[in-house]
Image (cartoon, rainbow, N blue to C red; front, side, top):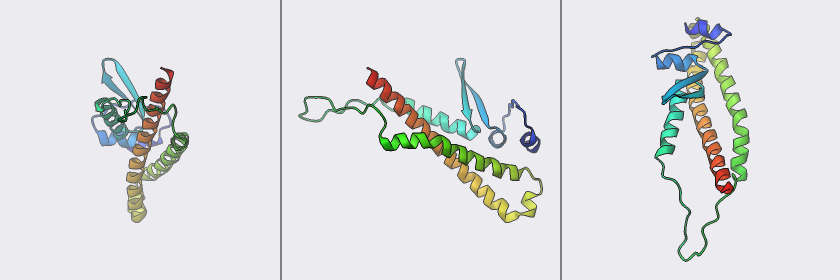
Length: 161
């Protein structure tokens, strides 16, 4: 089934309890979060889980307060925009993610060949390891991207008030 889905050029809506299968086949996840809320995540099930954990961590984190220094009569100045380094990272992340996803698709395409693991055993092992690395790198990149976007939105909202 995975091979057939990998070769199919159209769109398939898939519902499965097999999370590993969904992770290997899905390029996007639509998750029902309750209360009529539908979340759209690019990537597989593990990407959705990483996003969900970030959301829970953000909800659990206390809101930051203005820092008051002893003896200071005025509140600390808050930044109004991302730092130069953060803005450059934010601008570069979509391209980096696209490159990682393209490499991931190329490896997964090789896995679609049923004889690949038996003909090229060492290359298959390297691809397995690299695919695991790519999954971790993508999750980290998406997490960093989301954190920078949220920080930028908070700063814009704070400067508007």
